[in-house]
Image (cartoon, rainbow, N blue to C red):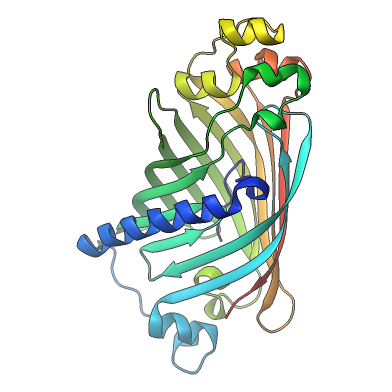
Length: 303
């Protein structure tokens, strides 16, 4: 099952931009994977009988290697990192897999797998990273100003064994000047619902739950939680310059439950606690909140 990012994109103010960036990144990465197809070192496994021709969704996967899920719903999340106020917004949902090596998910980003070996997969990842709008800040904090949305590029390593999985992700922002970099680790226990042979790729049904932890470099933490001299003068906050280190740890859950025929409900909930320099930021301590909760629910159609 797809694992949503620990803080999901703010679709309410940037849905079109986010999807456009994802499409552009997908095109570039698709060309790359076409030029360098994945290396499979594990012994090939015969397709389950449920994926033979005439077996519904599994047949589509075997015949074309493509699965697709489209939908819409709503997301609730902090107005910015460290915010107390929650923003609600409408959100599209797109999840697709093109064979075993390319996947696109509006919550997880674009992944291109370049190596399979046993339980381990390695590859490249591209994600949308929302900025901070000055309008989302409380009036007394608007002297902090905002910063633009961007994309993140990096790599991932995933290990899966039975119901357990571990996902390691490292990304760097695509922006001018000092670039933020993030490292994440996500562990999960998954419980499939229904017959897995009939649920391939974007059509999977089930529940998953697990912890995550995130660390970032100095540039990333300064941009999101720092207060420079000019900002301190404009807001009355103390100057603050966090160092690189862990900034959030928490729990995340996501699930997909079939309703009727090709329709399903999909959702996620992430609770994270700011730690380290992020938790000590004046932005958080003066009207913000150390506990960050994001959730979303979508009605999804699988063609």
